[in-house]
Image 1 (cartoon, rainbow over the protein chains, first blue to last red):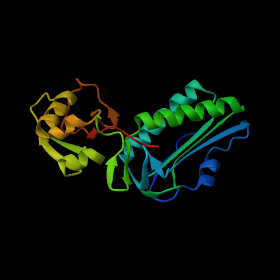
Image 2 (image 1 turned 90 degrees about the horizontal axis):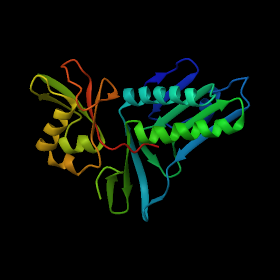
Image 3 (image 1 turned 90 degrees about the vertical axis):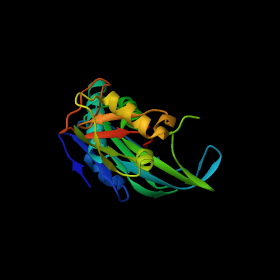
Image 4 (image 1 turned 180 degrees about the vertical axis):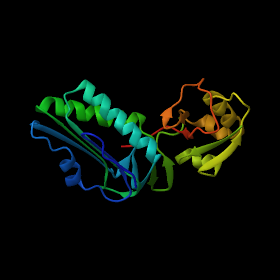
Length: 146
Length: 80
């Protein structure tokens, strides 16, 4: 799997469990007092259905490019010094970590705001998909008109 | 011209392959590729959205395609 380690940023698509400590280590900065970490995990239900597992897929090179663009935008909007984003692909079970985002800023408030901007934008724009396998069927989430 | 087009997720299931070489008229654009796909594979019309990525960026509709471009079809994303 591809790894990008650019100046002050850290982006990965992984086909194995996300090591949260690695994500935290990637954003250590002595001048920053606030570190916000977001973990997205697999939920056991969706729209009233019992979820068995999820299958994630990514257009890996473009997803990493998007992560770089999102981090660049976040660094312009907020005083973020370092940003790490990691998304897992493959089969994930209930409770597994699907995505981890860590941001450091000088103070705490901007850390939360920048981290929220990163996960919200990643969900909207990164070419990553999840198929939900539930009791009695499977579906690519948010794909079809209803 | 011949364009290699990558497919992912529900798009891959609709066309039955993760990549196809499509013969498009010279001057084809991102938008004309979308029309071609929706006509050839009507299931694409049922998706909430369908975008074309060229060289790993979302393409504007009128962007002309070239044989050397890295072209991909992006169905509605659902990461996170």
